[in-house]
Length: 311
Image (tube, rainbow, N blue to C red; front, top):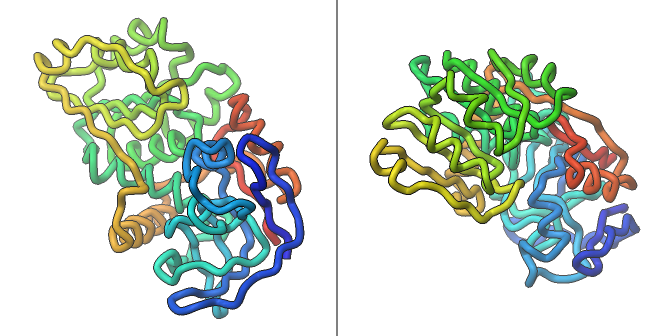
């Protein structure tokens, strides 16, 4: 079977034939259809995540397909990081990394749930606990996670604004449910969002965006950090944090226990089925274009989710 393999950190992946071992105890064979591409996959390819994992190995931390005749989502269990992942036609995976896909959810949409969908569900409902009383700002609202957060927060009844640095991405963010979209970077963010006075900010960017968010956020507001695509080093006024009694919350999906992951994934797919979580698929690329997918993520040429066709 064909798989996208990492032979050396920092080098392009190689799509090549691979012998697949038989499933061992507590493992299952899955015929794969669609796999999600995420920033963490690029970090893994660079050696910033899972640097001690075996080489060569198949990458990919989330995919959907069939096992034993039933539609399933596959994610977690160290896939792509400490063991072979799921960017392949077929994979042998731990049983606890498999979640049944409910009726009403396609394998395309399920293929985006293992990382982005789970993150969006957890940060909106479990960490920020968004309600109809909130005014929500989503930084990086055109991204895979950000676009899903917009839809979930809007479904909760909140006022939702999205941020992007590209005029071309405004319409897509609006389609996800944002009442307003502001276009600009960290240097202009404060004046762009001052009118909103957000009670909740979802931050997947980091870097210089945190300081203006602290200036603009309402007292008792919540900032939820789930990524640092603009940079991990942050300088901000901590006096504002404690004087406003702002809560700074972090989300890292790799720390979830298997049972918590499974419950979150089921909830995320139920949200897809009932329409409160909307999945925007940018494009579905053939597996052979996996390195092009990495380049598009790096150059911010993606709106929503990129998927790989694994069939």
